[in-house]
Image (cartoon, rainbow over all chains, first blue to last red; front, side):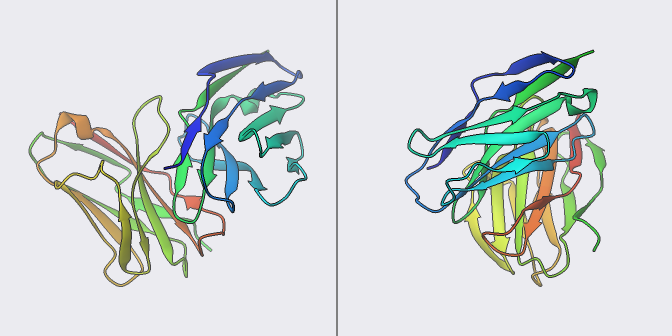
Length: 112
Length: 113
């Protein structure tokens, strides 16, 4: 069974600075996707970034980038130039052939 | 395209009552997923459908829970004899295929009193 672990229940960062959220996963599958989702207080699950396991290049979406280490089964999210609107719960998720499996989440606070 | 819609958005029920949630996926999406999320936790997988076939059910889905997708379009999740531990947000999501993006609805909040 796939598992996703986020070891940081809470993180905080000063506005305009950079923060990295950690995620590790476990799977025996070779073809899969990894995601970071953001869930603000409204509870709507918003896709932040996606990484295909077969791609060696790390995905980037504007201020959001990932560090994907396939051998280590690590998938961290870096948020640059943090903004107040980035405050939310962030979930790392794994998707193999079947379902999406989520980590426990990291609550990110942005300090003005 | 409208997004994934869920109804009702909020439901308060007394312990022991039955409740039903409905999910309308994005048009033409053949996969539909149900998740449960409690406060401060990540969403937990409950079940998923490919068209009308229910392909996987989590152990979390006790015999009080049943989900259907009768015509491969909308889905319902019914909870019988609700318990206080069922209080959570029930999220529905859909996708076009196994490797396409999964889109989430806004969730249905259940409070059992």
